[in-house]
Length: 286
Ligand code: ZN
Image 1 (cartoon, protein in one colour):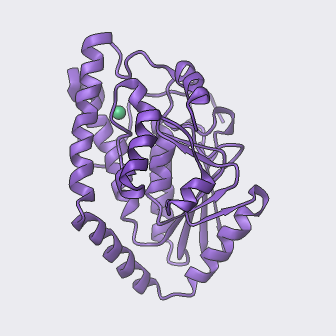
Image 2 (tube, rainbow, N blue to C red):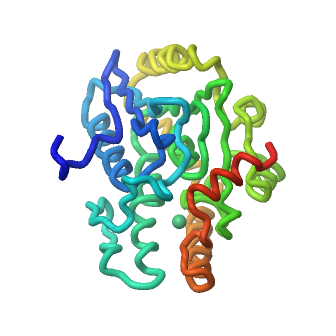
């Protein structure tokens, strides 16, 4: 690789009619920069276009599934040009609140919606930390298998922001628990998430891939068009229950918060960087 090439932030493997996509930035707890998200979109597209692939698994290398969006690694790329997938403008040529708005419409809300609607079943395979932006990648999947050491956390209220950009918490958790989850920014253990119906299985870390492979193999026996229609039906029911409209509204509150933070502190996140957040996350009750 020369110095100008973009590194591969993910891995792709096809095995027994299943595409295994893995985030591959374990050194930075698989935090997501924009290039990683674009590469993930490319790999979902690859899995989608391959008729041999009947189920897609999204996992991650290393100790953690994903610690969220990249708030400050050496590969942070907020100010780099990026290829847009939806018909939104270039964030680098926009001023004020519009810059982050068009960026997040395309790369966060837009990508997550597009991935939640992939007409093949998807399974998230989650170990360790699944924080903020990490939740977005788990929640766009149809099923979630977690290891015993996994935990879920959305601490962005600390940044003055009402949840992540693709905020499905109220549809994933009972209302009291969703409020607790966000107000406290505390860790939700895999076991408690299972008890609340947010994840499908909790298994020892070393058994997780085997468990996911077993579930995926069973799904591959079903007719693919039947699976597509079933997924569309389930997504439709969620949308009829208000999920899409609610998430649109929350996205706009999220951007009011970014704009407010910028006016008050000059920072989208109210001055909360990766280091401050990591420290606060560790001490949040859970
Ligand atoms: Zn945001």
